[in-house]
Length: 115
Image 1: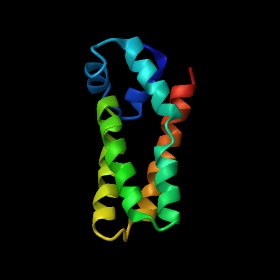
Image 2: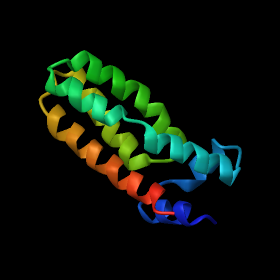
Image 3: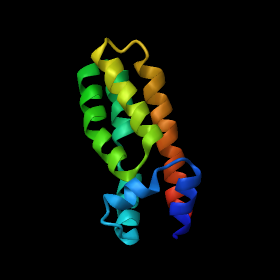
Image 4: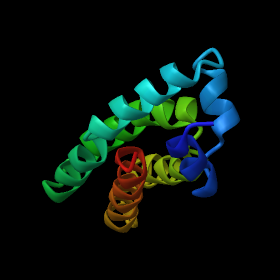
């Protein structure tokens, strides 16, 4: 198995889910991971939060959810779900959650770019 995939599995990603949504084709999964690494949705969420645009932050969380689920990034998926719920409920914890998502995304990017 690819080194990046092994590292992502060690980081808690559900590789089986990611491969399943990539038709069990490792190269397609790796390609999707590279596209994910280029995605700046968490940073957009953070900018929306900082500009007090909670609706836009919620919209980004909604669209990012599918990406995380399909790649098997469960921990980030559930964190993103918490962001969506927080945005729905007035955003009390939103800033902390968004910062955490950005940090986790950066960690995943490091793994993806490591090989």
